[in-house]
Image (cartoon, rainbow, N blue to C red; front, side, top):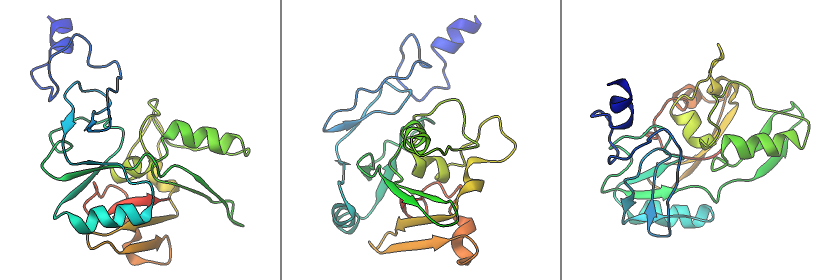
Length: 193
């Protein structure tokens, strides 16, 4: 009985298939599929390549939803909103004098580890699944087996607000900084961390 429930859980928001826990991704140009689900979102899929394209998308739609890897499947991901996929926003922006790295929020945890390890650094506080995007990991309070949450290592966020404005919020400088970790995308689209 337990295996039947695991494979065909009535609580799953995904369409039935034998194994939900095996990550697949059947995304295409016009669809986005979450990490676990076999039910793709259709229509309104946007993949901006730069800040200007993201700003055009935000300004052209009344409601925009940025999605990451879709590690936590729910009906919140597939809505009538414009769906924004930030994969093109993966880059290494350098390390400052305080030894803090800047990365694009579209990088997966795995990609980030590769970028940092090549420079003798690494992330701390993430879980065993490394496909989550940095922007999503911070917005959803990613955690692993560690005592300190992943977002506790965050020092700054560059994000686009609903009106297309780009903001830069830093720890110890801006009172709004503490609102970004765990914000579930309600404050804006995280572009850089």
